Length: 245
Image (cartoon, rainbow, N blue to C red; front, side):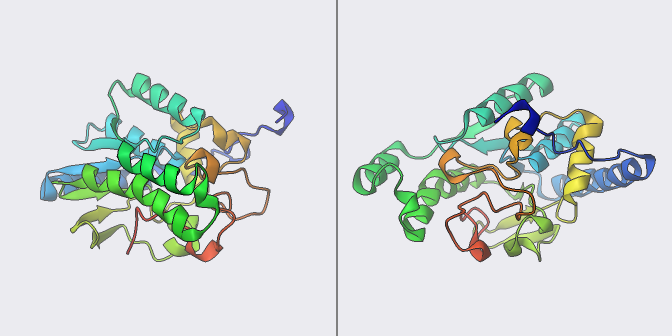
């Protein structure tokens, strides 16, 4: 990709007083929501998927000294840019993201049985891969937790249109917070620009949603922001199982 084609997601954002006021007000609501749930549930964790929304939440949590464990899942197939971001975040905020990894024996069995890129062959094989690399590590991460936080937004996909700020996670039997559910993409990037928050450099190359390297591609102008995730599948059901209902 040529330097001319690299554009920062916030290049066209007019960071005026009105927009700054909106993101400041929304940020305070996020802080209040998280603080309230810390007081109520005590043991709260943030599943940091290292997307732009998650970087916003890291910034708010760390700057406001909120007592939240921040963890992420290393699937073993993340892009190098994502690992670079982990290092940048740890250096800027002076903490270690707790990383969870998939079971190596299950990965070996899956690959040796189905093939290294078997997830392209069927939805079932793709979901099996996601279960091993993402869902099972998440289950371990949330064990003994009373509530967890995500960076999901309603605008992100058809499967998230009814997303609420707070809900009960039936899969894990704990409380779940989606404090950015009503935020727009412009508001997220306005916050990142205004506060100089680190983010994945792939966002500058038309990757609005970033997961495992082989399951993520850049999108074209006008495409849905989740179009680059599992692009070979039905657009109405693009989830990995982490947020199963």
